[in-house]
Image (cartoon, rainbow, N blue to C red):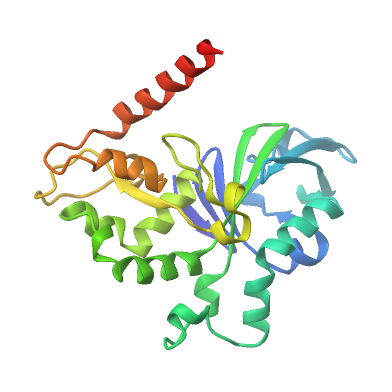
Length: 262
């Protein structure tokens, strides 16, 4: 269902990607294009009607509103308050400084010529229901840095076909657009735990297939974001990996066991 138009990308019926732009940072709003009226429920709204919603961002809930600002054309906006605006601006301020000064992305890749537009931060918007949405930031620039650093540490390599896909920045970005930035197995989120240091960081894991085979991959089904600990558990035995579903069961079962012990 992927479709791209203007500064939006539709991932599926519940997830869209939006490039960070002036409207988001300066005015705390997103103008809803005609192609996304159904996603935000504008078709059901009457003139002057305002739909109050909540947006979850970094584990906090913020109030927002969806409304039609041009009833004749059924055009609308999503607007939020000052607190969410400050939280988003704070998270992307480093990128804004770099773009304003036409600099480069951090010291790790300072020698390279960087196209800053290519690394524009993204907002992943997930619709839980008509009243509840989730915002999550994705930083393509951080992925480039992580891959460069990862290649410097040979002890971290996972050999075979998996390694090739897991280090591909394009595949990493597409997987995170669909799945988000938290570990799909245990739910761990680096930024929630480590703050600025963990911003934009997560590994990805290629599921199911034989290491020595050649095949086409389905990014939505075959690639998942995963934390270092869960990734290590999957590949702990060099001769027999466990699959991600099995590990997810172990994590869930252990959490329930620990809960019942209390």
